Amino acid sequence: MKYKRCTNVRDCAIVVGLPWKQKNETLDHLISLSGAVQLRHLSNNLETLLKRDFLKLLPLELSFYLLKWLDPQTLLTCCLVSKQWNKVISACTEVWQTACKNLGWQIDDSVQDALHWKKVYLKAILRMKQLEDHEAFETSSLIGHSARVYALYYKDGLLCTGSDDLSAKLWDVSTGQCVYGIQTHTCAAVKFDEQKLVTGSFDNTVACWEWSSGARTQHFRGHTGAVFSVDYNDELDILVSGSADFTVKVWALSAGTCLNTLTGHTEWVTKVVLQKCKVKSLLHSPGDYILLSADKYEIKIWPIGREINCKCLKTLSVSEDRSICLQPRLHFDGKYIVCSSALGLYQWDFASYDILRVIKTPEIANLALLGFGDVFALLFDNRYLYIMDLRTESLISRWPLPEYRKSKRGSSFLAGEASWLNGLDGHNDTGLVFATSMPDHSIHLVLWKEHG
Image (cartoon, rainbow, N blue to C red; front, side, top):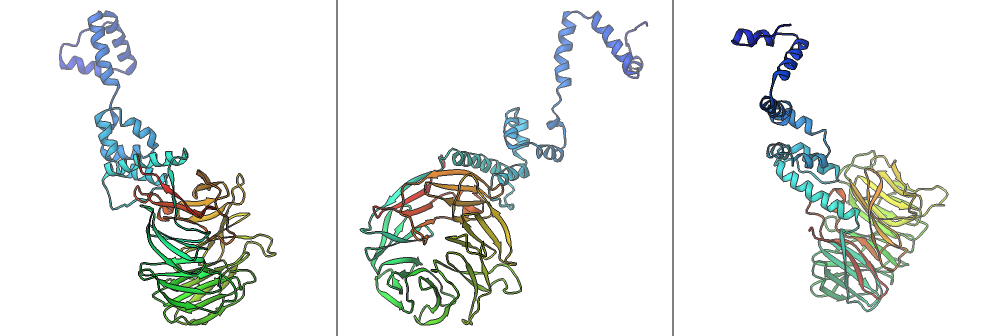
């Protein structure tokens, strides 16, 4: 074949129109005739022609679509390729929101600032790395009681402790300072708000106290056994108490009179919870107040409202022959009931009362429940505090615990802040995680460590 030089547009068009095989032959011939200068020129220009920046050339929507298929670590590596790549990747809001969700982070979809979510993700992987490396927490102690501390209750940064030294104290967890200290009876259970403290006692009574003066404003008598759990609602003007006499009593909070005694338990009632229902069923509607009472084997569900005389709606258990005991901790958020046993964590759907799932941890037996959310659960045993990722039902972190004081009723230890259990957001991983009373009468605190 004879080759001639393209001297005009027509000749160039002929070469362009050649089949690919002849084009290759033409190029081979040109290369064979080229010197060092021409070959260097060809090499320099080929790199530019072959290495096309597809992320720069594609429409932004297509770039975002492709980026969604990459894992976050690869995305961070891609950000180092060039300023243009970093700009495009950092501008993809959905990519970084998804990455945060996959780490168990709460997402506010109204915030569409992609750079914000990239920074949140970087903060998230740091916190998750700390959890995996068992470096996310720190410890502290509260010292002030002179006898055993039986009862703890936490709310909004404040921890209430009830002791055998006939006192109750209110602590600011962030500073470790005692805000109030008042003389009471021996406390087996406590619950408080800004104005008052309600205590259940081993002397078989319930009492209401005023923080500011320390005065007892109400005394509830009627139980024939120690009162192990109390709960109240100011809107309903109702107080409920669970006792070692196997009964639950419903009281008029302001008047101090007993409105009803609920029977049916055959063991100590170690937990009562008063909560608004959030789901609809044949037995209740959203907004109805519900009372849960638990003993060693059963959880009973009662309707509570303006009409006090009520019958048990349902009794839940994990074994019909009572061969499996329930742990004394109970979670109820209006949608789900969760309790732990030797077989694992049991979650009931409150609309149907059906068991949704049983979460077993074969590697660690007898884990007790502290807190339960949409994403995480807080558990513990005699040696460690554990965090479980509920999406995978795997333990992702643990923290060593000292030899704390054991309590069969579950009143001498508790979880702190609970919002992070529904997903971390970069702000709710602060404050108290866990508190328990110690043999030396102090309170051992596990706290979130501040972000580095």
